[in-house]
Length: 153
Ligand code: RB5
Image 1 (cartoon, helix red, strand yellow):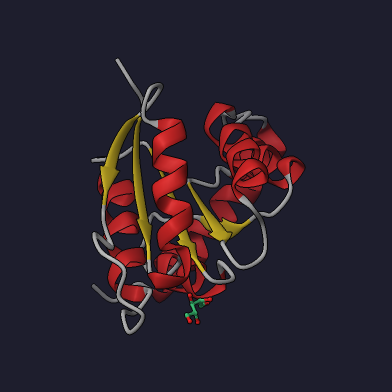
Image 2: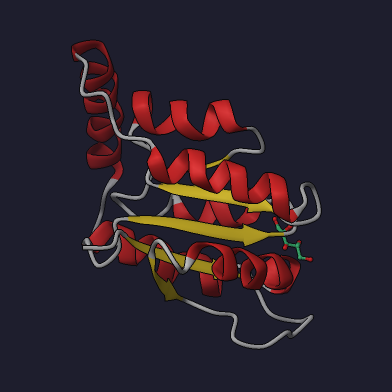
């Protein structure tokens, strides 16, 4: 069974999302959260939140969100309990973030990196697995405790 990847982007990431989907859809099942057309006035929370929700609910295994810098997308995604998003513009952080921190959403800035590097970073992220080592679980659990402490829903 193919791994399910939720992908979303605002206008800043629209072209990179299209290019990335073209490269990833042979190997992964893609759940495209939009934008479905280029609109220079659209807002990244409208695409970041559905990706984070898909991952948090288990509808998708992992998520990728793209905006101009990756930053706005990441801030929004991390508001959703269960989402663990980070901006990674290098392959080391993209796999180590999963192995040590159980990162489940990769945020990319289409105004920062090009398609080939984005593809390599996405592959590093998608191939990585949480190591489950005790020290990483301990740190992960501390992060989840903080999330629970501030959760109000
Ligand atoms: C949109 O112009 C831009 O601000 C947005 O894509 C993103 O970079 C925010 O972090």
